[in-house]
Structures are given as structure tokens and as C-alpha cells.
Length: 249
Image (cartoon, rainbow, N blue to C red):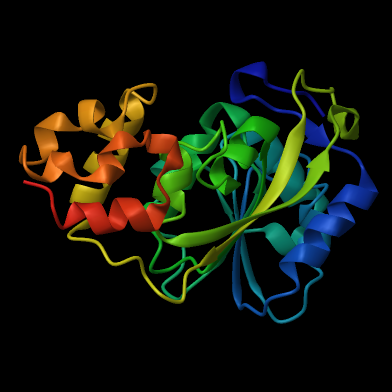
């Protein structure tokens, strides 16, 4: 199978890792499953064996689409030949998203999932390790930031396991990690999603400054006197950010 560097393609070849990913997926029950970037079908061939599911895949590379449809008769008519970032919602009912996500668009993929949060209760994804850690990290961590706080507004994120670059062909320069996103049962109580997003982005935009200096324009001077504004953004939990939205201008 030929690789396209422009699409950030690295094919997973380690069967043990593939089985771990499928085992993580099967801990929850679901009917509709979307695989992002099936590539050569290493994961796909296991997914299509799961009984009683509606399966679709989204693959931008037309040579891979042709290969998959020729190799697995089951996939005829089930592959969406587009970028994941451009497709409309693929199922009318709730669906699970799984994939060895292209590293060059991985954070955009997570933001698209957030847009679809009402339809996507579960995501199992392989990402560049750094992105996986950022998505799963909590306050106080050096890698906790905008991605962590925005994803965790709607999803509980669990870092499942590392994946060595030797598990791929060709080996990427970076290590990988698999995470699970489960939609929260209790939604974070915020003034508005827009206010929360603005506060998080503004706070982390100058993460070395105290919150008081970083978000000065968003609060009245009297409110900025509060002790919490002595902290830096990385020390605030998502609950702290949520509570602060109600005091914004």
C-alpha cells in the first residue's frame, strides 16, 4: 500500500495494539460506528466483525477507498470519500467514533467531535502522544491547556495506553497514545458555551501571567480582586472556569 505523506499516513501494523483498541471499544454497547481514516484496513477488518452494528468509514484518499472496497465486500457503499472535517453528520442516531486519527488534523478532529457532542457519546482515538496527553490532562499539569479544558467541558477523557512508533509502517517520528472520551452524564454548568470558550482561550493565551492580568478585559475591576485571580490558568479546574463564567461582563 502506498502512503501519502501529505495526508500524514502511517499504517498501524501491530496486531496486539489493534486488539487492545477493539477491546476498549467493546466495553460499551453501541449500534452505529464511524471509523476515521481506515487506511489499509488494519483496524477495519476487526471492526466489521462486531455483530449487529451499522458501520461507516470516512477516508479522503481515493486509492485507499478503492483498495478497501475491493478487499472487503462488506464495505461497498459504506465509505465516505471525504475529509472527516468536511462531512455532515453521518448517522441520524447516536454513533461512536473510532480511529487512528491523522496527526496533522487531530486537534481539529476533537473540536469537530465537540460540535457533534449531542450525537457522539463515545470516542476511542489514537493520537500523537502529546495531543492525547493534552486532551486527558488535569489542572496543575504542564500540558493542561485550551484543548484539555474545552474537550473536558463535555467529555470525561481517559488516557488508555501508549503506542510505540515501531507499531507503524513507516514509523512516525513521534510516539502515540490511545484515549477514550465518554460524554459526561452531568453537563458543566456555565453561563454559556461561548463565555466558557472565550474565558479558557483568553486565560491560556497568556498562561505565564496571573489570571488577573490575562483576563482583565472580561471582568469588572471589583471582581478581579478575588483570590482566584492570583492563580495562573493552568491551576484552575474546569469547574473553576465554569463558575467564573457567571461573573464575566
